[in-house]
Length: 281
Image 1 (spheres, one colour):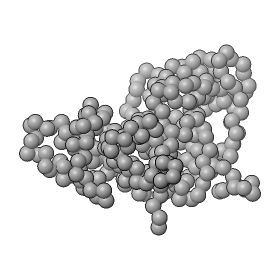
Image 2 (tube, helix red, strand yellow):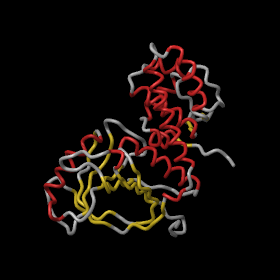
Image 3 (cartoon, rainbow, N blue to C red):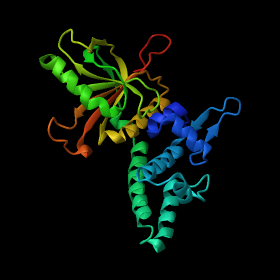
Image 4 (cartoon, rainbow, N blue to C red):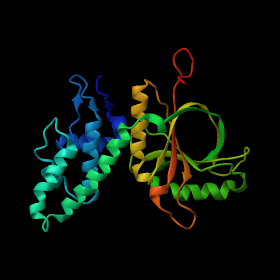
């Protein structure tokens, strides 16, 4: 069975790293794609690259510099297992536990999280469902910026639409790749009927065949579930359409943030029909 490869845009969404960062890491020989086309220079990534990217991303989040990360990963064999390699590195650092305790603790966290993520990626697809979505009337505010702007935008929608709201808050994500500060997205609210409100775009979004997955955990880890859906689509030869949809089944309340580990978000991605016009499910 041939290995599944992902384009740089697909891998950006799965890893949570912008395309420009992936190119930079390749140039620095920190994260090397598994295959680069000779003629076009197009980069292709695999699931082993995904594990590597999450190690690098986690260490960067702990304020490790690129040179430090390079030293931690130095000597990793091209065909070696990243988690086994990190275990070996952790054992070597034990002799310097007082001086390098920060690195050892970081590796413990990364190994635990990536082990869980690997198990999730390799599980059966019983949590992924294929279903039909009906057309839905929504009011939304399309925005380009940081996802952290969502709270303010949902607040505006809540005040504008009020008693007309008829379901869970949702967001339409228009980007193919992951973007940090210039993401293209649209917080939306399902509504009962057409209303006219300043700055709110009211219309019916189309229904159709989709694949869906309920993600449990903080929003910062949504890229993992996007990765599962994209792997499922590759395996079943499905063509995915944008925008993807995030339905916020359970999240922070108006006053209390709650436990992010218990947040529930359903990701829905519409699937293109085949050339004969038949839905794929």
